[in-house]
Length: 301
Image 1: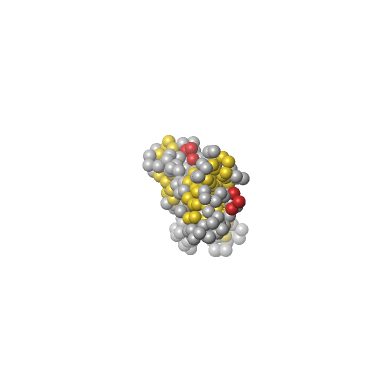
Image 2: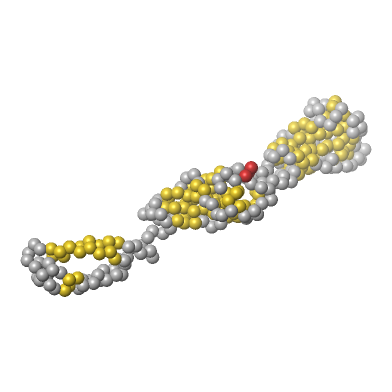
């Protein structure tokens, strides 16, 4: 409970107390703190002494405001996915409003604080945020050092001048690229000889690191008997040629049986690109096409 100093100004009607004639008054002024007793006062003729009541004053200040940080998330490591914007919220007691919010950011690896332009302050330094109950502060990736750790604390001030401080949030920044995507060919099956059972549809899957997405997938098919690559319409390319497929994390590509030569061997390789441009390549799958494979008892998948 917070107690505040106040001033009392009172007027005593002396006539009502039988001290002087009707209409005569005496005024008193005193400064007091909660719980202080106003002692006996001596008045002009006729002289009498009056002991006044004890006056106890108690005032309760509103609760301090609350501040919180919503981004970055405590304990997280960021890299290419750093959003460049710190965010948070603040709230105050019903009788007050949020007047301002500010943020202090420390590079805990170098023990330097953000000065609103760089990490060059040796002591904690708060900088103003944009907004009050919902606030944000820009911190570009160019101001962060790869491998360093950081801490963030926010404070909000209400209209009564009371200050509330958030819990400290810690994070690490690293620009190491995420792992490249993983891609695989599920059909045809490696080492298989197909014939009438050829399904005409190459299929596969692709996945990426948690901070990225699969942007595209493509496939290169070689007739290894003729050393010609599939161009999207026929085996006429002399160099490896990738053609786009349908789908990303689950993909497919049509290769009609009419485009295959009985007795020829083929290889298939797929590659996937993630949202950061990282490239992942599958293992090579080899198969043989023989239109008489089933009739001759050949193997197939």
